[in-house]
Length: 140
Length: 140
DNA sequence: TATAAACCTATAGATTTACTAGGTTTTAAA
DNA sequence: TTTAAAACCTAGTAAATCTATAGGTTTATA
Image 1 (cartoon, rainbow over the protein chains, first blue to last red):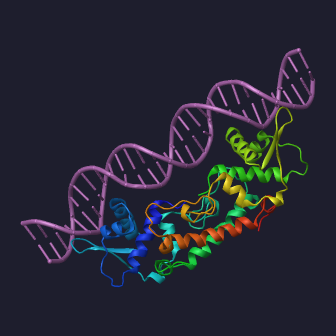
Image 2 (tube, chains in turn blue, green, orange, yellow; image 1 turned 180 degrees about the vertical axis):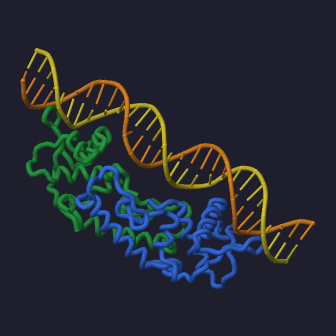
Image 3 (cartoon, helix red, strand yellow; image 1 turned 180 degrees about the horizontal axis):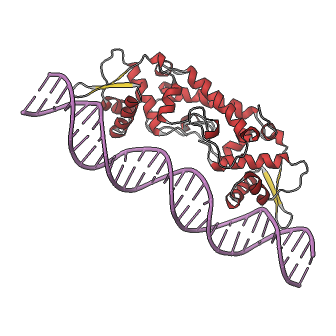
């Protein structure tokens, strides 16, 4: 399951990306427009700033703005920062690898091989989609 | 993240599937062989029996056995029973759909459309793999 | 100088996970 | 007919994680 944090974070990034000008967007504006608790959103935006997706400006008229172009931001990167590993088990994670306690040999593990396939499928989708792609998505 | 429960459940099913004869397999045997806490495993096997994947026989010489052929058991079905929805957000789940509180219109939601793609990719992988496929997987 | 914004730290309730404990019931073999 | 081994059942619990909330401080603008 995707955490609320990740979901809100993606929505916030998409909201900022949809703004034509590059003026800072306030957390309060995003909070209202996207129905997200403002304090919770603030902590998420802060994290996105610290991890290099957003810049910020303090004080009156301040807010958050994108540092890179939306088309340069892959959704894999966003999800990894907000949610953590894309893989469903640590033993198939590229960026957060961890060995399983119970499993003596990954090469013969039935779960391992299945989850590698799932991971690669997800990775393809999330790597193909940039913030630009998802920000302007319309109804099918 | 895949829960331990699901992981253990898949491993147990694969273990049973690898047995050539159809004699019942004891929880204790699986527990030892796969390094899973026996009591925890028992509860998982019970759930798999109740949801129609396994049959059981009580008493001495009893155990669990597959009800269907391994090639007839899709991994989508296994995961849905053990883990729940395959989708990462309830609003794109086919079997466990739920509307999001915050989202006024799914058709314009950036997360929604992205997660539909991820769901479909996962569904393809998990639908293509049967218990037979994963039980006999070898090193790449 | 007042206001509005980001920024920071701590905390807390709810939920989920991953078990454990302690049995009962059923069946096969001795 | 007794004993042992197995599934089956119910309850609880420690730890972690999630989803916030509370209550401020700092910084910049008008």
